[in-house]
Amino acid sequence: MPDVPSLVEALGWAPWAIIPLYLLGIGTAVDAVMKSRTPQGSVAWVFALATLPLVALPIYWILGRFKYDDYIDALHEFDARIASGIESALQTGVRDLLVQPSDLHDGEGLREKGEMRAFGEMATLPFTCGNDISLLIDGKATFDAIIPSIESAETYVMVQFYIIHDDEIGTRFQKALIEAAARGVEVRLLYDAIGSWKLPRRYLNELRQAGVHVARFAGPRSWLKKLRLNFRNHRKIVVCDGRTAFVGGLNVGDEYLGRDEKIGPWRDTHLQVKGPTVQGLQLSFARDWFYATREGLAHLEWTPQAASGDDQTALVLASGPADELETCGLLYTHAIESAEKRVWIATPYFVPDGRVLGALQLAALRGVDVRVMMPRTSDSLWFKWVPYAYLPEVERAGVKVFLHEPGFMHQKVALVDDDFAAIGTANFDNRSFRLNFEATMVMHDTAFCEETAEMLEHDFSNATPITREDLEGRSFLFRFAASATRLFAPVL
Image 1 (cartoon, rainbow, N blue to C red):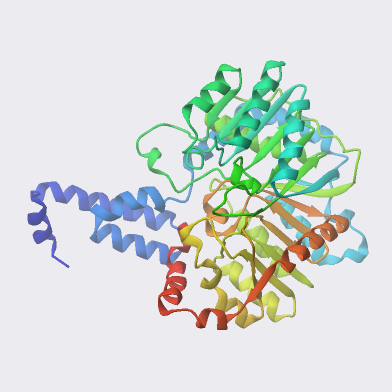
Image 2 (image 1 turned 135 degrees about the vertical axis):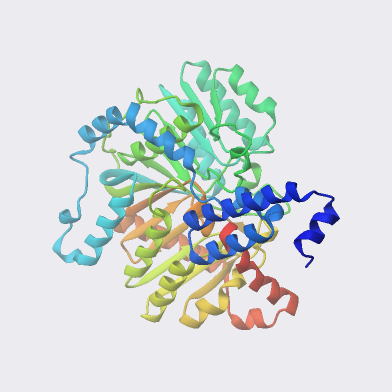
């Protein structure tokens, strides 16, 4: 490696020009020490910023930050200006629907009560009863439920997706929003600028011209904050009239209905939600919308009502990089650690951090049926080797790993014992646990868990178990790529 004077000479820079660069690198290293998530991360950033600031500085400002500071500021403003009215309405309506750990039967035990207490402390809206939540399996069932709900909305529709494409289903979706606005329904669309980067301006302009309120998830437009490509709003939420909502793994695109010939069949899971948890999803949208537009939505329907169908207990966890605690990762870690019979996980991307990986290993070692299902075919080159990256460690402890086929499996589902099912937008990876804005529904209902188990059992029947021998039989380059994948785990 050339020394600093040689590098300065080679670049043709005067010493007075390079000194501020190194001072900026050292100053940024202080920021890394104060804000990095782990000691290992701090050491790596300090070394890189102090020795190679020209390379490390732009990477740090794009990938190194882990708190969305201006979103936190927006939440403080939201709380000061709007939240009190919303909370008053929520508390009035939800008081008789809240489920406290003390409400559980004696036979359900301290473990279950402890779980409910912990989950409730992290949740956007704690456990409530009176919910009617239905599984929507795959794209056709999902959009055949979402589109009619938009078409029948009477007062307002709020829609939030990470990815929206201008294709067949995207056109059908756009048409439903335009027709809703035409009949006087208040329609809002929030999209992520990174996930929907292919969406043409024409598509959005047509919505705006029809009276749809459109915003992208982006705060202040300063040049520095535009570099924060590592934070994405990965939520997929639809709320109609404050009484029906949808959340899950599907975005708006033809590939989500299995129409992409390269990917093939697309396996995914979404939820249709009725009952008080709708207000939890609506509150998540309202916060994101306020961040994007500074428009409060206190006039919406904020009084929860019990659904007329099933009486299910559920909560909403809207997690993200503005949280004081890493709530998404904590939720899964605690659920796994408390499992007694089974932990079944279906995820397109399995990149666990150390605490989650350890929880899975310990669960398997104490005899819990731990299964992880991933797709054999990935929609991303980065994740081609992911199923094999952690295979030796988890299999050694007794975790069973399965590859789903044919096509691509994109669902985000976790089932713990017969007690808890978690379904939403969060993948089982570092990005969803720490960097993305996500929305997860947690259902505490035996009948719903049985239905989820049946769904996953069918998926396991279309999956092939893999072992360390499968990895060891691969070429050296494949095994090296699988091991190297773990180096990029913090940003995958």
